[in-house]
Length: 209
Ligand SMILES: NC(=O)c1ccc[n+]([C@@H]2O[C@H](COP(=O)([O-])OP(=O)(O)OC[C@H]3O[C@@H](n4cnc5c(N)ncnc54)[C@H](OP(=O)(O)O)[C@@H]3O)[C@@H](O)[C@H]2O)c1
Image (cartoon, rainbow, N blue to C red; front, side, top):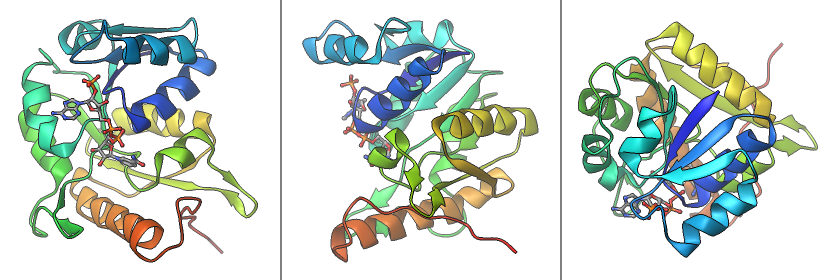
């Protein structure tokens, strides 16, 4: 799969390295694709990785992963070119100061992103756990769960596969509006890890019987 990862930070590095290792072609989309920092990331991700501007990376990829601060999402998508028909995995978390949700329960960051990226097949994913878990989702009790949701079943299946390849147990949480819950779950993960002192080596796992 040809995947553009917009962003070159912690989430982009974990996902990009993981998928490049598993045979996908990764283009890291950066505001400064020629910078030393980005060159180091490309080298660390291996021969299937490259860097480009946001518009170029999106143009050459069928799947786009948005891994920028939510505050930069609208402007970033405006620079991305035509996203119609592309799978757009949204990893962002819209967080207001004081670790509060930016939106009330009538919408979500993912639904805003769908409005800012007309025609994109938006899937919320990779937002409910830390970047360290994206690099290593295996725990003694089993694989960490990766919740995802979206309105396009084929797009969701593609992101499901990408989550599974990294070692997660994917769980379909339903339509894109369920991102309201996934974004709140992310707040709980951050609260537990950073406020409540559990640290970042924690992950959610859905149990069944
Ligand atoms: N860190 C986590 O554990 C984690 C877990 C789940 C979800 N998330 C979410 O995933 C997203 C990325 O998180 P991250 O931790 O990877 O962030 P990060 O390390 O700060 O990296 C963000 C990247 O976004 C790009 N960017 C584009 N516009 C930007 C702007 N105006 N200001 C700053 N950076 C900008 C930058 O790449 P260039 O400079 O190359 O353009 C930067 O490397 C966020 O929405 C976050 O809430 C994070």
